[in-house]
Amino acid sequence: MMHGRHRQRGRGGRGPGRGRADHLLEPALLCSLLHGATHGYGLAEELARFGLEDVPLRRIYRVLQGLEAAGWVTSGWDTTETQGPPRRVYALTFDGRDLLQDWMGHLRESRSAIDRLLEAYERRDAQGGPER
Image: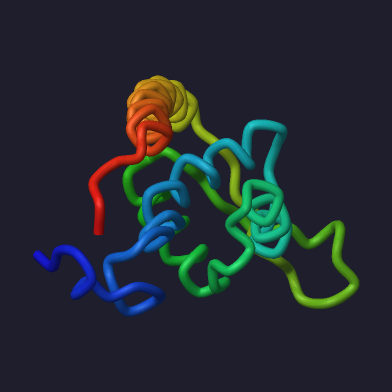
């Protein structure tokens, strides 16, 4: 583990923002399916609303395949709404709803811990913190 100024930042390092999509992609996809079945491009648009606009479609489909294999999502072909080839649409299962509910509890707990961390940082930073 790297500490201090030797820690790398940005995409290749362990700095802030790294892994956010990895941690939020699954619950964000499940949440996106709450209002009904949709296709991958529609899900990508929903993810952008959650701040996950940089997730590649191939990654979205890979996660959807895993969710389907676990029984949390189902898929089928929609031939009615497209002028082109049929599109695969995904829908949330009852088990997927239960998982999403569990995820939301976990995220609430995480948000609470993050709030406490930020408050502690802001208190200490306002007091001047350690000198460099």
